[in-house]
Image (tube, rainbow, N blue to C red; front, side, top):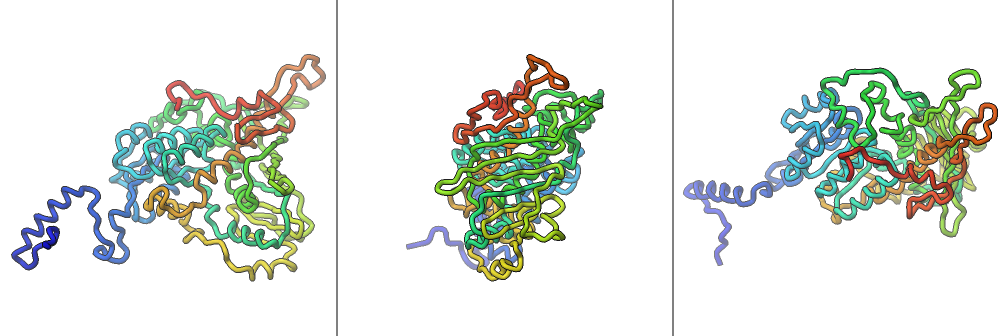
Length: 491
């Protein structure tokens, strides 16, 4: 039997060989695969090279697109940012990438030319961008928290499964060695049973707990303000919102919780196998604008807050977790000596067990056991039983997602923070903001007393039905589970 695909040999066949390769390339198009051994060590086969669309190019977007590029292993095919100033470095570094201001135009024009999308925009636009990309079958890497509110997160989690796309949230510490070591320690019973957790951060490191910025400002020529607003309620342009301070404003950001709780809550959420909380309660710092004159700034997240969450567990005592931000911290455990720093500059986590305490810093880094004299030797000797993410301390979180994109949905290895995990965890984080929004809810007081002109009925323990996304004991709080979209932006 003659092999019809076998090429002629010898010089006489050189013309025929060229004709065959030409015909084959026309037939196979972009699917023509060059074997790795032909390219040699250090090269990436075209079949393994992903075409990435980077939406949001400044700040964290710059980090994300470089992580996705992976030192040239992948191709940054398109760039998108509503502000040319934020995109300047990316345009300079990737001159061959097509540049768009409107992500909708990018996705429509490039839908056949991209494999995956990074979403590194302000929180209020995560949902509309990621959903549009997933509905086109594109894999997505989305910065934390997944979205602006609980309902958006739930829809994104479902959409990832329905559209069979590979997903990862940008809480890079979830790929770190630290949280895996903590899981091994806990599984080995080194600190006993945990039902009390503390997590804290020094955020905000931007203005919060203040009145809306005032003044009339011209929109910079490089910025498309309408696109920046996206689905959020209309506000006049103000430099107090863009490019960074948006985090502190309810209309755009998710405050200290959105910035850091996906890092700080991840270790206890993962170590203890937590799910939806059953209740939440908060307190926040008051702001006084004059003698006995209390400020009321519901458009801004508070300068500091404490959030109390309760997680039911089948057959075990519930876990109570307290979140602290704005420089607030928990009481030092007796097991940790007075001179030992709690956590690190950004914050920390304490898991209080019946036999001891586990502590770590941001991203689950530098985990430790206390009392140290009793537990350190046992912890150091404990063998590794949970697989580590290669390059976890550098670009491993990106590379894990990128390899999963190459493998394809359903064929890829489990990811550290796919939406199946990151979705419920992000909802838990945003429960804190729901409680803060409820805390600010007020009605005029019928019988006014000195300094007490309003009732604050939402300042109580809120009972949560996680499966149905509803507060069951204060109906007014349910308006904060979702948001109304500006005209023209409904999904």
